[in-house]
Image 1 (cartoon, rainbow, N blue to C red):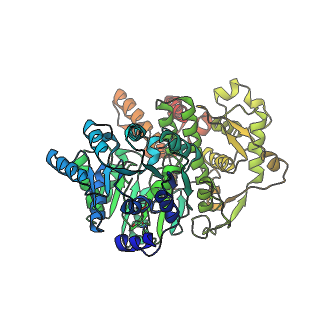
Image 2 (cartoon, helix red, strand yellow):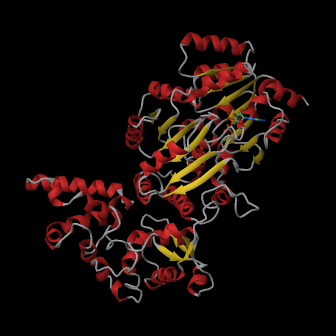
Length: 600
Ligand code: ADP
């Protein structure tokens, strides 16, 4: 009864959201808690409400210094005695708050984990009664989580130094078993009450898109679908963030950008502009968003692929906190995957961690290739069963385009993997199937296997798409080594024996080799922009050496086609528009080498 009254009085709500009441009851029974709820699920209330009932003060450990003021101001607005201590305060402000804490004037104290082990804080904590330590964004303690913060390791040390062990409640939106186990272990939770609420966010519409021109798609969306509220566009690098934001601004949108390379003051200013609706679109790297509780975010668009499913769900989850219909659009592009793989291969980490990161990335790739209900895929990923196979609120469920039978092509692919003894990766399998005369293929005698050259009417990109689809549906297993290899799975047999058929959406079978057809305009190619850039760098170098303008070497049109078809044999290269014998003789090998290096 008391809980409901407080809920109404201080927070203005009549009912608890799913899971909140159970968590609060357990905290009040002095039991540790591990609360796993999706972004927007209402985690804050789970520790804020008990803080009003328990004696003493609740210490909230949060990584979000920039947002502490907003959070505390919000609580004060609700008539709750709350404060924070962090590096933005002057000495006299800090001292004043410490005195007030000693006089038991606060129910909630927000601190950053860095502060926990400082002398001042240690002295203070010995003199006040801390009844509950709430750890927000608790996955930051796990090296395996995607937001690891070393200072989170201070938390258990701090707790162990207290005279009386307080109740410890940890909260996260991350639900992989491994991370949860780590949180419980590293925070030394004692027999915690564990609650995972449903991860479904019914109001969110999920869609994976593969636009041939991302910017055009984005503008079209903003002009026709975006009518109120605000939106977030995530890009993978600071460079893309800045250039996309500038381009949008020039085109008249109220937009700004945010990334980790900006100083704190600029970031805070931009964040405020977004929160206070001075701008309604923010273009950002993943540095933006943790703790952002703007209710009316109507869309989250991933302009580049995120790192993995978890980051995706957390970032996409920033849409529609107010429960209104909102869009989560993921723009898929294979070159983003290449980039992410590269980043993983370059980062310093142990092999086990690298393997986990590669696996996690692959799950996201599978998500982009599935024909199934996207909501179901997400929920299953988070270990939640779904009753229905279709949600009728995602890009796949609402896609009524027809399916095309690709069973025979799939059988050829599987058979090729088998004949080449499950020793090669995607590129080699594609080359063998297409009958490549590449040195590496010939020197390994792969032209002698019976599946050599049995698929000639699909481009490399097209075959790659089909192979990815088969991986997504577990008919092929891709290992997660540094050089991933394709292997058959237990269910491959069903396809090979004709017991199961493979159907793919028509628009994804847009893979018949179009290279001979002159009707295809260059803008139709979803060509690889990174590879294109590599070509232009090389062209500039050659042009300077030879003292000729770059277009004399190759036109951009040619580069676009090259960056789309990625030919690695002479015959394939010669089929590209703008490549004749002479051009091939002069430059063919140089550019093929660039393609090969890039693909590897
Ligand atoms: P999380 O930290 O899990 O991402 P928040 O704690 O920010 O989520 O809560 C998300 C939104 O839900 C906030 O706008 C919050 O005010 C609202 N909310 C929380 N509890 C309730 C409730 N019992 N009834 C209605 N709205 C709630």
